Length: 134
Length: 179
Image 1 (cartoon, chains in turn orange, yellow):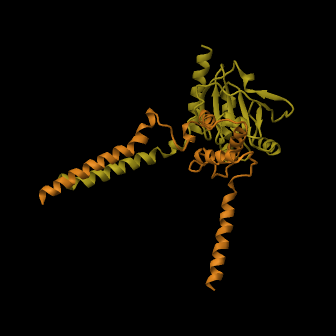
Image 2 (cartoon, chains in turn cyan, orange):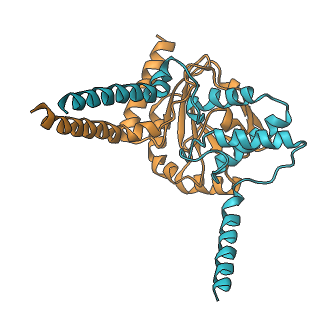
Image 3 (cartoon, one colour):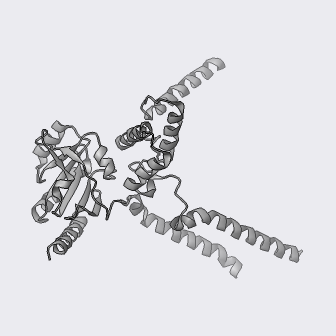
C-alpha cells in the first residue's frame, strides 16, 4: 500500500518536473562547452518582460527570441563579455542579474559590508555596557 | 526615554522606506532605454501593406518622426489606438508603425477593425530588429530626430497625460530643428 502511494507520488512529481522543464527549446550545440556557456548566460540574463525571471526560466516570446539570439552569438564564437555587452547596449544594465561593480553600484555591493560592520560595532558596545553593569 | 523611543524610530524609518518603495514600484518596472541619445539602429524591413517592398530606418533621415511598436495580439495597443489616431492627426510628423511578432492577416484585420492612421508599417515577424531597438513590450513609441537620434522613448500605452507630454516634446523638437 505504502509502496503504491510512494510510486504514485514519484510519478506525479516527475510528470510535473517534465512540464516545468519545457521552457528551453532544444538547440543543437556543436560542443558541450557551448551548451554550458549557453545555459550559464541564459541564467544570468534577465528577461525584461517578466522581470523576475531569467532568460532560462521564461516562456515569454521575447525570452525565446533572446535565447535564439544568444544561441546564434555563441555559434558565431562571440565571447561571454561580448554577449553581455550586446544585451546591455540594448536593454541597459538591468538585464544583468549580477550588476557590475561601479561607482553607482557601490552602495549595492558595499551596503551589506557596511551594515555588518555597524552591527559588529553595536554588539561590541552593548556587550561592554552589560559587562560593566554586572 | 531614548531606549523606549528607539524601537518607534526604527519602526517609523521602516514604514518610510516601504512607503517610498511602494510609490516608486511602478517606475522601477520601466526599463530605461540605453538607446536614448544614440542613433536609431539601421534595419530594413518589409512593409505590411506592400510585403514585396522594404523600408529602412535610414529612409527617414532628415525628418523628425515617430516609431510606434504594436501588434494585433497586444491588448494595450487597442487601448492606445485612439491616442495614436490623435497623434497622427496633430503631431505634424510621420508616424511609422512597427508591427512586432504578428501574423500578417491578423494585423490587417486589426487595422481594418480599428483604423490605420499610421504613415506605413514595418513588419518584424521574427523580432530581430526589435531586439536591436531594445523593445521589451508593446506598445512602445520612439521619438527620433532629423539626424536619426532617438530623443525619447515612451513605454506602455499612450494615455491622456502621456499624450500631452509627448506632443510637447514633439513641438519642442520641431522648433529645435526648424527655428
